[in-house]
Length: 155
DNA sequence: GCCAACGTTGGC
DNA sequence: GCCAACGTTGGC
Image (cartoon, rainbow, N blue to C red; front, side, top):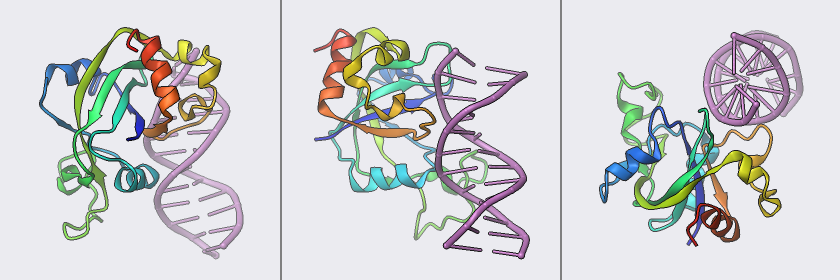
């Protein structure tokens, strides 16, 4: 089982939005980066856990935990001419972009701010904390995952 | 709104 | 295949 960190802009889709879905899954659409696509395709497995990170907002940080709820599959928004994620170069027989479904897994007692993450020396290696990191999904180690859950008040 | 950093594009 | 220009991301 692997662990991930998934970024989302809370204005677009927040951890609260995911919680409100309860057991229903949500397609994590809109990934348009080859590195991230390949990671979803080759390494991500149904049942993996992910940290839900809020980016580009007043208080960036980890809001809670989600579960990867499907294997990677074609992202339908690439075929939707009205979608901002439309890719006219992608063919149905050979989809260029993939997504996974995600589902709410557990809440934190408290939001773990980016500042708090930076303040924890054991997290210094995390990609998210590196300058210029722009991947919307990154792998985290089990150790990092556990530390952040603990910081959120959930062992 | 600014700006550093990065991925992608396209001319050559 | 190089690399400058451009667009986007994301923290501040």
